[in-house]
Image (tube, rainbow, N blue to C red; front, side):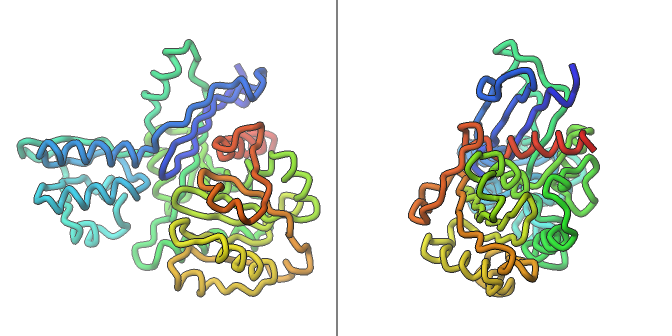
Length: 348
């Protein structure tokens, strides 16, 4: 079977990991789909189980997304129990090992001989589990794997929010299409993507923000509106990403934390973004990730149509935007974006 026609797309979020088994000969509505707890949520549950049992922890494996797992590890340490970690998985919690040590995590080079001890394998990708689930339903494992993760980038000496936005800025100024953001070999500073690549060499990798935008453009309404210019919103469990898009070109990107945002505030931010009147520093100062607008954006389009996707979209229904559901399935927006980007890469 042609690999291009057979893709396992996995969109790893903070709350869920969304999985699509895409086969070109099959109607997309009939392709197998899974919405499962995210890897960091699973690790958090395992940590809490160890805490309950009074076990110390040994973390092996790879760097992965934090959030829920970081919170659970902090709570574990607060009870007086120990956490040991190899350096790679330890970088999940901070890009600087001294900050990880300051959390109370002990860095080791091998499994310590401490009892009782629970070992947890860290990582954003668990292909054996997915393969086992598919086999139960007589579904063959696709030959090509594409994964989206949110990678802030390795930035021990500066805020990873600042560093992440530097990457968006470079993309916007290059004029490249978003599908160009899919990597066969991710750059060294994208440590979370590199960890997935180490887990399963040959995996194609993309940022969750980019894959969500590309996937949302597969929605018929958004695709049509993007000819004149559309504001796309991905309201995730942890992050809000907005992009001003016209004919697949991205003119502006804005990123904030969902927990810090209200519909009223977001409306004002978007209005100012469209008018090139929202400073990056203002967003950073209020703990958002930042924003970047290409000069001349306001003359290009009003970007007034709004398309909304993401698991927390209902909280922002008052924006009056179109609730995007590419191929009738909002939760797989990022997976559809991955498939589109893989196809784009194969066609070049």
